[in-house]
Image (cartoon, rainbow, N blue to C red; front, side, top):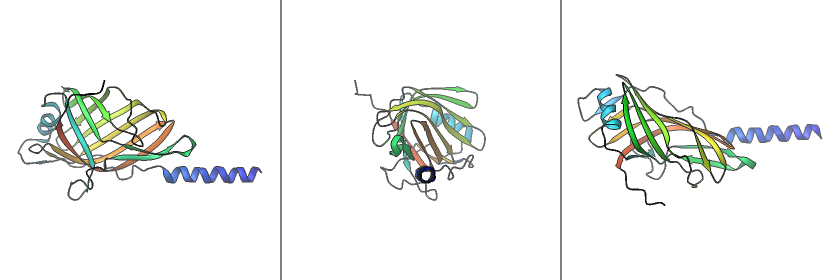
Length: 207
């Protein structure tokens, strides 16, 4: 009986590990390229994230790392894993609305709202802090550990890191590598390449 129970535990553990996503495709600090202008990397980051009237929205899609183009406009950066009772989970980072931004040296501090549903159920995360770190050769958008609730799985802590390898100021686009994870009553991880596009934020019509 004990041996059978141990086998079941091993089987479930193997299933869990195989179902969880991976962050192996993430590149920490790719060299930042500026397209369509002669501004420095620091100036480009400041203009893109800190030089706009708030609120504004940044939408994301999964992209091809060779071309920087969306693979599918409806496919967002994602993390996959499992919740309670081995429920398959998929979180998608569809967009981020920047409510406020302020500069602190080379660091841009953002107050954001996330459009990041799990299994097509919208999250409840409230206002989420984020930062954009920049140097002469690299930039990274970080959404540190923050509390979110999904009706489908309950309470989790979510993180997202998006390194930036290109900024196109003229067209309001940046690209790079992402890694996303959440932990709690559900667990998931994912990584890949994304394209992000600036949009003028529309008023929130929800009550």
